[in-house]
Length: 260
Image (spheres, rainbow, N blue to C red):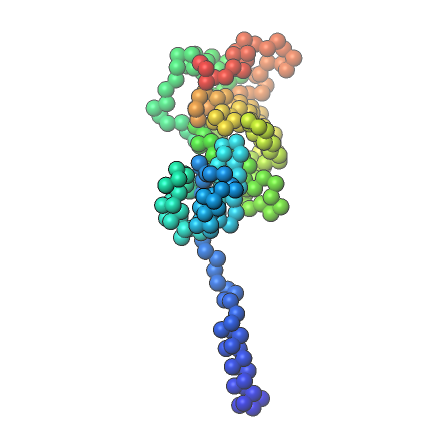
């Protein structure tokens, strides 16, 4: 190749580089936000907020009437400033978004009737322990239960929940199905490592119920009020026969504990 040909080739490469986007340019870091109090989607205000946010993906959370937005981190400050004037809430999704139980605050108080019911549970021959747990606020729980539901390409660990059942028992469970009704969510899954079944029922008021099976134990979830729940750990071999008359304590358990 002579000198003239080499110069022409170099000139062509320079022109191509000058007119072609930088293919290796890194995508901006994105963060997940819970957006609450949004105006209707077809409104000019909603569209203006979404445009300012540079939202790439969004997941509606119909039970709590909120949305999850994926936005460039550099847009967060301007987004907070803009949405404040419309009463729209913007909150970053926590890193432990899929942890649905944590130990309740030490200063949690109970009514006399709630105390009596907890004492009755603890006195049962089948009961091994009673743990008092708190759930995150409702939009975070709905997100954890439904993340990427129905997506053709769900993100890593989207279907997994981390569930603390006691001080020493923390399980990871993987979603097998989830159903959203007009007023509640029914979530089913399996315990990682054992395949034991899990059923969770959740309402946007914050109430959760259900059962987790693990190592010969049944962990029954009972709502106490607000975000506070009792998790009753029971030995299956000490539980009453399935066809035995329903004991009084079980009939009491079926009430909505928010009323006691």
